Image (cartoon, rainbow, N blue to C red):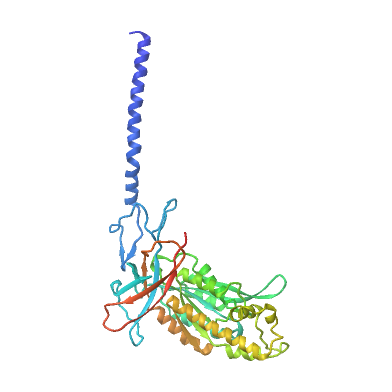
Amino acid sequence: MSRLMKRRRSLLTRVMLLTALAVTFTGWFTLNPPQAQQITNQQQQQRPRRVNGNEQTPTETKKPDTPAAGDEVDEGDVVRVDTQLVSVPAVVTDSSGRPLSGLRPENFRLIEDGQVQTITNFGTAETPFEIALLLDTSGSTRDDVALIRSAANNFIEALRPGDRVGVIAFNTANTVSAESVATVEVLTQLTSDRDALRSAIDNLGASNGTPYYDALERVADAIFREPPRDEVRGRRAVVALTDGVDSASHSDFASAKLKLARAGIACYFIQVNTEDFVEDRLMKDCQDDGQLTLSQRQIERYRRIFFPTAKAETFNSFCQMGPFERMSISRELYNLARREMNDLAKGSGGRSFVAASLSDARAAFARVAADIGTFYSIGYYPSNKARDGKYRAIKLEVRGVKEKAEVRARDGYYAPKQ
């Protein structure tokens, strides 16, 4: 055989060998990724989910190819979530006001905009709670910080060991121009460390103004900035000791209410009555010691709400106002504050308690702690998957109980936007 023929045969053999290898590797790359992914999926430890009050282990739940709404998504995954889990904290009482315990998911019927929904998540009253404790140390309460500290510490001690609390308060800071301004101060983030909470309460300051609306927004933006853990989903609340009369905020009530509603936070208020104290000092001459003034923001807010067509210069100076005008503005602002607190409490499933004085705050805090300990948390994925940002009404009913039951729950939520 000639040398040329040998070279051709050797070249042909190499080509056939490379072709066979290419087919083999192509088949390997085609078949192995899904198999490898299947092995990876089987080896991954899935986080238990709560469905109808029961935890499902990895052997009971098969991981879907595309995560469902509310599932945890691994880094790098690309997924479009069409719905979000809506949490509905609820308290159920009998006709005499005593909490009903031992209820199960089948005892509840949940309706959104007239459509019955399927309950997918359920937590009993024993599930831990997360609480933002807002302490108003402005105005007439500045001289009673010791009473506020005592009442707040008693409230924390009345909570369960698994409950976590964050503390937020007001303080006075000096600006570059040495002007004193009221600020919102987060004393501690959510923690179950009772020593850390006592230390935060011991550091309570005081302020010359009340940035109340700003504080409510900080509750949503700072204390509850992280999504809730599975075990506390639908079990978050703000508990505020305040008279609710804002004097220094940059935000307003509508903005604060929207943020709290979007975060699904139950609102509790211990309404301290400071009206007589404030009114007495508003009547004093602007040069007298111990005199209080309405801030320009309060006056402007009053004009905008009650006299929107009036000129701003008409309400330009507090010291030029007569005593009856000052009294009228103060009373209107206090009544408005009470309506706003009651509105937030009712719409979120919380409650308002009236404390005639700071001495009564301890008893009010005890009632709040007892009420929080009776919450059920109910969750569902809305059948309406439109991401339109619109408000949706919620109605929660109880069935299958021997006596007439009353339900207190949030009355709606805002759908997410695209």
